[in-house]
Image 1 (cartoon, rainbow, N blue to C red):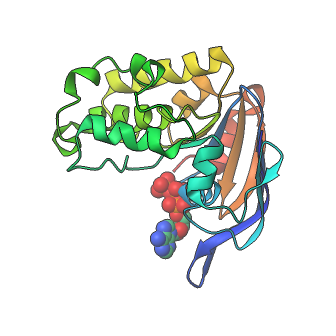
Image 2 (image 1 turned 90 degrees about the vertical axis):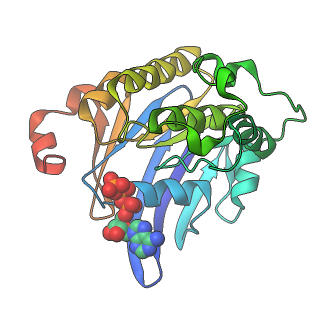
Length: 231
Ligand SMILES: Nc1ncnc2c1ncn2[C@@H]1O[C@H](COP(=O)(O)OP(=O)(O)OP(=O)(O)O)[C@@H](O)[C@H]1O
């Protein structure tokens, strides 16, 4: 269980998130929605610890991790697929995956089969440089790198952004199969309403850095969409 309580976060002088609270329960896919610039990535970074919370708390499996490093959080079981993928262009596909493995507390030096099972294109490209992959392949690599640490909660920041439809379908299938297994909870920031409706259990909408609405799939009606999401 991941719980964010009354989080305040930002950059320099600017406060971006104010009083944000949310929860992700076991086996759930919780979606974070909102127009461009409302603070979805800022929230993801704060949960991972690459951006320090100014106020409030982040707890994971009952432990307050607000002051813990990103490395500690990764070892505790938080996996992160950042917006823009952040693949290491000069490292091979295999070395990128090893970084995911090394972020975990696992002692193994072998990439777990589960990490790449859903991305059959990757093992054939282990020796290629990350930078030589297409955008869609890099997104699959970023996803597999996070899965290599065998996370118990997965933070997915706009995994479908700029990705061709066939790979969006692959990512949808991976999220569904993770959900069906029920072992990993997911916090998913995403712009595509169609996508989140097809995988999500619960929804938070951010506006101006605060939670403006939250609810289940059946409550996410056209009025809400028009008010908070339509551009
Ligand atoms: N490194 C930074 N330094 C200063 N301001 C930043 C930084 N990163 C983001 N911001 C600002 O914080 C606000 C929230 O940005 P954030 O990326 O969290 O939004 P978002 O909801 O993820 O948007 P998008 O859907 O476009 O990715 C924006 O006003 C943005 O300009």
